Length: 400
Image 1 (tube, rainbow, N blue to C red):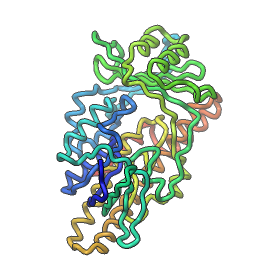
Image 2 (image 1 turned 135 degrees about the vertical axis):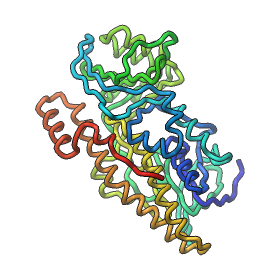
Image 3 (image 1 turned 60 degrees about the vertical axis):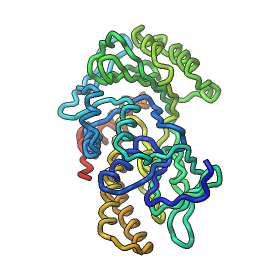
Image 4 (image 1 turned 180 degrees about the vertical axis):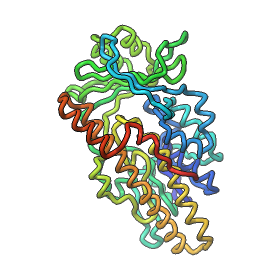
């Protein structure tokens, strides 16, 4: 690709879930955008994603909810079990909608709703700056090319170039690592439609059925010094996991043994602490961030993806309102309206993400402690300040 200069109205950096959802939300509001993805094709790293009621509300606003519901069974609740198969605790989901989607199904559904040529592949952004004459963003590409845009939306994940450009601190590294994968059972898996958690010593295994034949699973444990030397090759990764799980029931180890190699991933969990979010600046000129680039959090509530979908709805709504109010071709007036719209987006989202990140942080502390007293104390704090166990899923980001 040989590019010297390209001009766009709204450029979205990153073609993951949040980037595609934001482009689709803008499209449904009548606004054109372009998604700049560094890979050469759509990516679905992470195998699957849990979506709660709030996420389904956002997907319905995007027009893809009904289709995606057909691809994922309803999860009725969660069950905590011991390694010998005994049930320790059961929590019904009640009226909340919880389903687990293959990331590829979600990514493809979002991409399918976009106009042709919205997604541009092979665009690797290496830096971002503000043009001193126009005060609009300039994106510099790895091949020396330049992209100028009126608005830049950073949906480029944990290692966001856009977030880095206006001084957001890098996410913190959790002491937990997570391995994920998918396993297909041609004759049916036999698991109930529940989120199952099994803990043995420092190892946590989570299992969530996607449909009658497909299961998503993850394995969490504290990070060890040797992890930096372990190969990330799928076969090696699988062998290491099976060895760690030698005390688990045979059906669980077989699940990992029979997993799809292409679905396996190794993740060093990262997060933005609540106090980092409280003090952060999320806009410079006409640039902002969304999804993990803004509020990456641990997976302990299963809200990372759904929060990114909420961002997309609110961001498109706030930008569309300001653009509709200003039909002037004057760049200065347009820039002011864009900045006002982005500020409204940040104002609306900040309280929500602070609540989510604080709850997630506390739940992560609770899951990581072996002290019953500390666990009960954290649980009490969560319930006193953040309501019932499903308050995170009952949020409504509103209409487009």
